[in-house]
Image 1 (cartoon, helix red, strand yellow):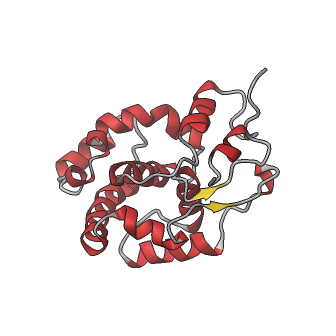
Image 2 (spheres, rainbow, N blue to C red; image 1 turned 90 degrees about the vertical axis):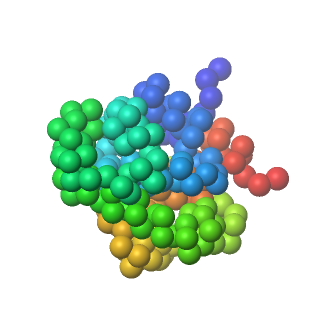
Image 3 (tube, rainbow, N blue to C red; image 1 turned 30 degrees about the vertical axis):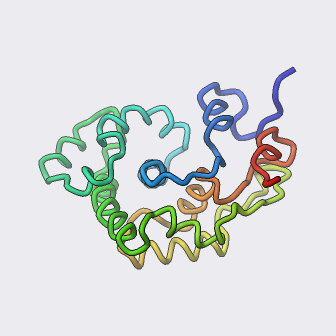
Length: 190
């Protein structure tokens, strides 16, 4: 018998693996937080499956999502990225990735880690939503509005409320697995 999954991922093996193994699992690793932040910012205006299919190309192009290295990217490196057919070659998004890495480091300096910074918005515990059908879930919430506003104030780009909400779902600050999904119960606190 097959597992009951959230409706948005059913039918594509890449989506299903991402859903089963990553989406909604609480993250506490700053490098992984930055990976999701970078990927979500490139996703703006595109489908998530497009980004997932290019994820390994992004990993190579962006030095395994090492934000310390990315923060040091030169104009020459950014120009090379704009020629890389394996990623999304949007100049504004590439520039934002570099700038966001620099601001990410500033958050680490201020809070000790990005993990400490971001989890304080949910008081250290994932929010547990009761989503019956993913199509009825909002694209933004007051929380995503608040975090988006704070990130923008700190200089981040491509962090609108919808992108932030997707980021919160992906990194497990919000459990938005459908109530009938096998991952929903697995991610609830005991």
